[in-house]
Amino acid sequence: MRIDCPLCGPRDRREFYYQGEAVALARPDPEAGDAAWENYVHLRENPTGERRDLWHHEGGCGAWLVVTRNTTTHEVFKVELATDVKRSMA
Amino acid sequence: MRFSGLRVLRQGLTGNKGWTPHWRDPEPKAEYDAIIIGGGGHGLSTAYYLAKEHGMTNIAVLEKGYLGGGNVGRNTTIVRANYFLPGNSEFYSHSLKLWEGLEQDLNYNVMHSQRGVINLFHSDGQRDAFARRGNAMINQGDDAELLDVAGVRRLLPYLDFENARFPIYGGLLHRRGGTARHDAVAWGYARGADQRGVDLIQQCEVTGIDIENGKVTGVQTTRGAIKAKKVGIVVAGRSGQVAAMAGMRLPIESHVLQAFVSEGLKPVIDHVVSFGMGHFYISQSDKGGLVFGGDLDFYASYASRGNMPMMEHVMEAGMTLMPMIGKSKVLRSWGGIMDMTPDGSPIIDKTETDGLFIDCGWCYGGFKAVPGSGFSFAHLMATGNHHAPAAKFRLDRFSTGKGLMDEEGTGAQHNLH
Ligand SMILES: Cc1cc2nc3c(=O)[nH]c(=O)nc-3n(C[C@H](O)[C@H](O)[C@H](O)COP(=O)(O)OP(=O)(O)OC[C@H]3O[C@@H](n4cnc5c(N)ncnc54)[C@H](O)[C@@H]3O)c2cc1C
Ligand SMILES: [Zn+2]
Image (cartoon, rainbow over all chains, first blue to last red; front, side, top):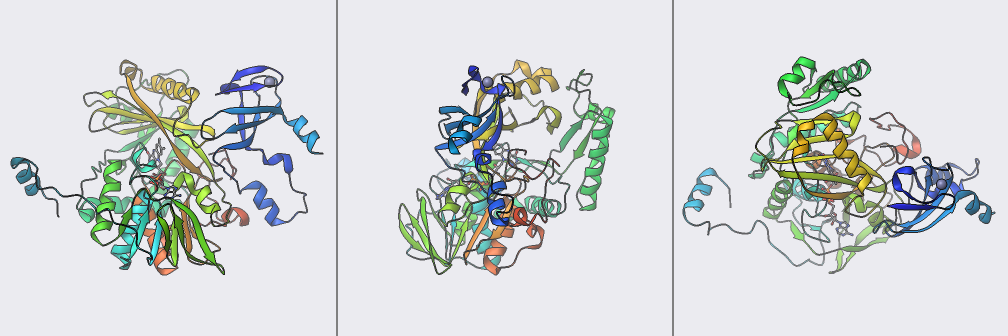
């Protein structure tokens, strides 16, 4: 699997640390309550097919990336800088 | 039909014409007392113990593919009871005792071989940790022996003891640990369940779970609707999807785990050897193939195959530990989908829906759990009460933070186990 880092170009999967589903983009408010936090910390959609993860280009530029990919074929559709995604959500 | 030595001999001499199918291929009925979703090791053993221990014989196992086509037929077959934490300890201890009587109980040769599992250590700190684990195992009533280097050398003379990065200091030997023939375990339980009247229905995918007023009423399948007041979800890597049919989100992420087998060799590795520092473990099958594996690929995946980086890593670790295996050729590699929980321990529990039960989260260690999980899950489904050895496998331990079972001590967080 290769990930096309927006800053560094296509790189081997080994350069990246996988953080999991990109839930951190929508962190609940500290006062959102137990259910919202349980949902955020533990419960997962875990879909087959398309999903968004957070990856860290630790062996490269150090950027946090939002990777949209297919969990059954390992195809990578889209790689964006997490800062850009977060900004566009605001 | 009962198997016996005499029967094998007689059949062998008369052309093996008298063997009959191990189970029927029934049409699904309109209604059952209970339905098990998933015909893997855990689903089949649940059905077997529901029938045998609780007299529930009007039940069905619904399997979307064929029996034993999932992880139960893809694992590296290690059976052991060397857990440390309360909750896990008593459960795996119970499961190992069931293994020890399994072949007689099922009248089926599952090739359970207690050849001994050796976990190697490479520093004083690791030795202390293993001594502590060994003591926990002994306190649980299981066996453990701490070996020094000479002790390991006697059993495993072929290791690279003087390795510069990971010199071998000793190992923890668990003599009652070993391996079993994975397919035979699925087949043995399937045959035993079928003989007691359980309908094993293959090519039958569950596509929906029917719930009315908070109570389960049945399931929708590719072979029509089937009613039941009790439904058990036992689908390993697919737990997230099936639970979603009941409107649930689970503390589970599915990951791929790979394994490898070499060409057949003469007997050379007599035990199960585990090299934790390198994330590598190995045993030799009765056919002679070296069966080995390592860690998860470490990203969510539903592909039953992995990627090159982990293959390379596993081969490197193998060469570090026992350079002699470099001469053998890898014959096959494959992957299975693991239902990973945040703390790396399983779930056997009721759900918020009346009559709907779930058994999942076995991560990469659920083969050894097949007898114990089926026994405890059947107890829960039949009686509504948790079975003592599995009573700590609660679904709500993540939300409450009580009773987390994090064997590795890395924190109850996704992607750390
Ligand atoms: C490479 C590898 C090595 C492993 N090594 C070990 C080991 O050495 N020791 C150990 O203890 N464990 C090991 N494991 C883990 C162990 O194999 C699993 O934890 C265990 O087999 C999972 O339980 P199961 O047998 O019930 O799963 P499965 O056999 O996967 O059963 C689940 C079944 O549910 C069916 N299903 C899914 N969705 C539906 C649906 N909608 N409708 C109907 N049916 C459905 C599937 O088709 C499947 O047959 C390993 C796993 C892998 C992949
Ligand atoms: Zn980069």
